Amino acid sequence: MSAFGPVSGNLLLARLPREDRRLIEAHLERVPFEAGALLNGAGAAIDGFYFPEGGVASLHDVLESGARVGLGIVGREGFTGWEVLLGTQYARHEAMVGISGQTALRIAPDRLLEACGESPTLRAMLLRFVQTFLTQMGRTIVSNLNDPAESRLARWLLMNHDRIEGDAIAITHSQIGVMLGVRRATVTDALHILEGNHLIRSTRGQICIRDREGLKRMAGESYGPPEAEYRHLLAPFGKDPG
Image (cartoon, rainbow, N blue to C red; front, side):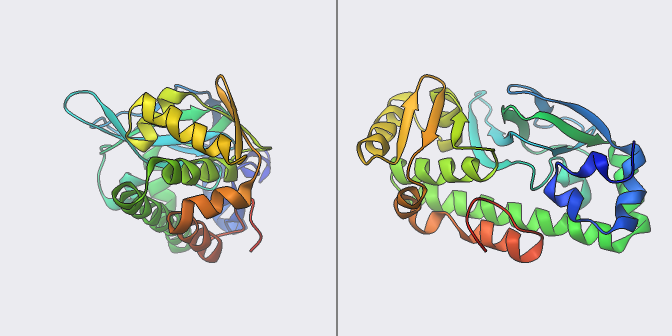
């Protein structure tokens, strides 16, 4: 692999100091990142960190019934498998690709942990991302408790919009239902509300963002703080200035 070329698609890796990138770049493997691919299974050993170069991975809590509830999403701003950095070998949550992004960069846990042992700055940078993701999860809890489905949908669409190129999000009603923790009929009603306010255009398998500012007003306080924290701690991110 060439020096730095392989990491250019992931914002977090691209932000690393040159010395830290040199510690890991020889161990990075570019792999497909296609919708439906399971990155880590809930309760299973984590066999790799995945740094998306595009697309979006969704993290789910898997209940005993087999039902999935969305907890958060990760795109090219971060990585999955971060539980290993906190001292466990097993994934508490399922990580699955929700929106295809062609490729991700994968590294074995022992290789990344070894590099973190050599470089406190690398470990600190990765843990900063973990902090922003935990902030995102916290806002998910608050939004699920306080917001109507259309506001939660607006937030979720904005989050995905930040992580893709363009304005068209390739997603199904079923995927939205998992991430919002609601029935398909509720998803349909929420989409109708957003369409009625000319905020989106929804077709089969795709949602096009028409009015981002309107979506932000609909989402309210549920959207913004985790994104601002990422920009403060790590790097420019998303489709909003600042």
